[in-house]
Image (cartoon, rainbow, N blue to C red; front, side, top):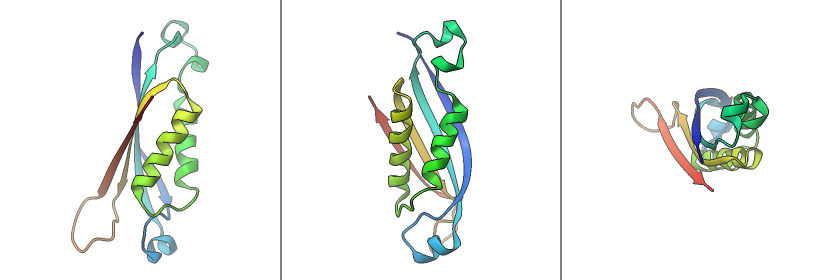
Length: 121
């Protein structure tokens, strides 16, 4: 059985996740990467979007989760995205979601805080 990987990189959203009250009030930008290992089925032969993971739909699934209910932890956010993608597309045999938070409220200078969550069938 063959497989392939679909990668959505640096999906950007303005949302209100975080533990601190000011994170909900002010909001901030979040970046999401989704690496989806997909069981090929007959998609490679048929060349039809219906037989694969439509990455426009996958982006919309990610967007709905990120812009939805506030999560205190980006770990929980990443896990909810992974679960939603696997539910929408059962042919995803493994998914790795990375969430980056550039404006993490830490007493120091950093590019971003990042969490990766993986799920597999």
